Length: 115
Image (cartoon, rainbow, N blue to C red; front, side, top):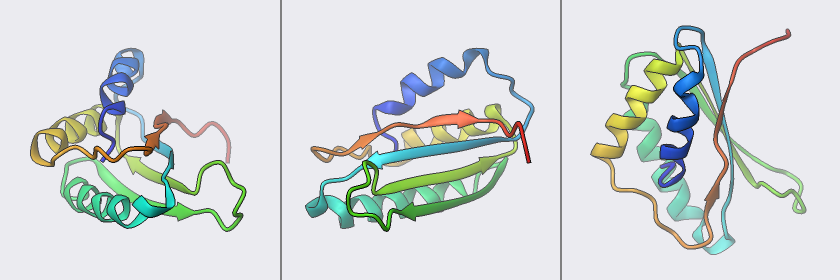
């Protein structure tokens, strides 16, 4: 589902630790007429990724404020950066990429630093 953005994200992960639990936070812009197609693709990606080693969970959030920059934010937890990278690589080979005009993704991996 992350389409063209994933290669850039994977390159940035080359220096990231590979063994600690990580959280993907992926806000994205979706033009209103494209919402259903994007949601359908998100569900396909989720269904694939949840079968992969290291997957912990994922949730899709929708803004309740109409003026929010990002109307959707995906939050996924993985056991490690390596598991995430491997799963995304497999997904990109298995699912057709999302190529809908106007859809923009801003994914990044995060580690918890405070509770």
